[in-house]
Image: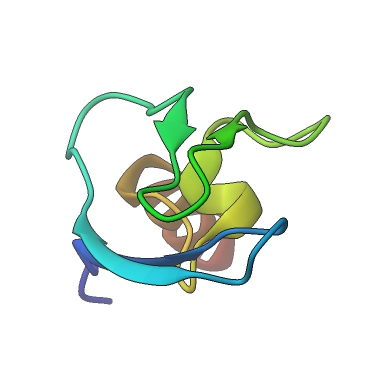
Length: 71
């Protein structure tokens, strides 16, 4: 499985979308929408804003999913 490093963040307030590069070995806990300036935080149970609002989960979650599939 190839790890995807880009994700499209969709603001739940104004629906603005922006493609972002995801960090490889850390979680991104806060993200400010450039259109409405809402500060996004992860939903309960999610590790980061990419897992909550992104088109792809973060690389760490992708690696965990890959590991679970191999077991």
